[in-house]
Image 1: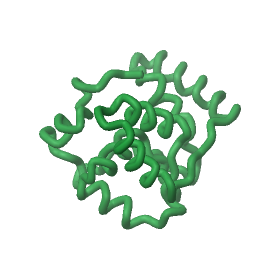
Image 2: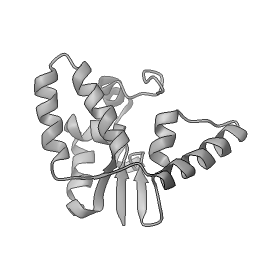
Image 3: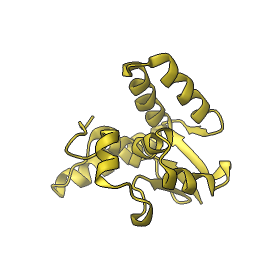
Length: 138
């Protein structure tokens, strides 16, 4: 089983969240992948950082061993179906999150949430700027 990391999971890892790092490090490198869309979000965050050079170096080190999954026409079709489904249900998610979710396939599980036993506390999430109330949807 491969795990498709979303942006928040990557941020937890980059911020050295012990439980998230432990979970990721318990997996083989071949099991952990991320979307080129997640890469774009992370690179945008690095560029907007108060220390862009330092943050970019950290990001490059984080990305180096990972496989980046390209966005394909098949993913675009999955995105269209997923977005229309969640909008019809009245439960839309942000378009960027929907793009990443569209890349999840059989054998590729999206790691979009931290399991309850690994979940950072509200204080940790506030410090990361990752609480839903603090996070702008893309």
